[in-house]
Image (cartoon, rainbow, N blue to C red; front, side):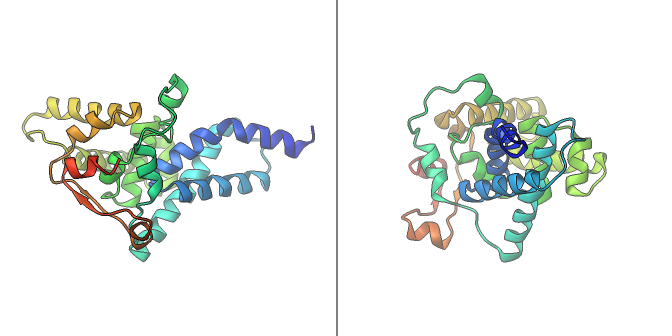
Length: 230
């Protein structure tokens, strides 16, 4: 096995997690694949002899690529909906999720959480996804979003409040808010779409772009209407 083949083999060991990170940040299966491919290209052109933690290095690369894609999308004012979300939410053939897949939020998770994530600013979304969903420390996220660790923590906190605002819990019940958000994220991890949608605000909106509309997707408003799209 030559050096390039060995590198490719090591990359494949991290592909599932990288794609899960990219998909959670971008909300698009196609863009997630593009981000992962770009990570491979950068890896293949880099000297990795001094890289002690390849998984962390690749996660940082994918996060940077995804953040740039998010910012580019914001500039073009695109809605990131794609039909893969609906396909993921249909249950598919994968009904059993092993612990490793749960840990990295496997791509079979439906799109309900993405509806909320799509309301966040790019840096907020990245900080929230990496820290709250993939347990990446703030001091590792900070260079990616070009903030201090403290400012990065605030980004994630602000995003977390937005997620809290998407569920029906009185603002005065802070403890209950935390419980509901934890349940919201757990339902997302486990692919429990009924529980996930039950936690959404009745006025939640699902939006589509022109390409998705041509493919047959339609916008929906309200938890019940959104549930019917999965």
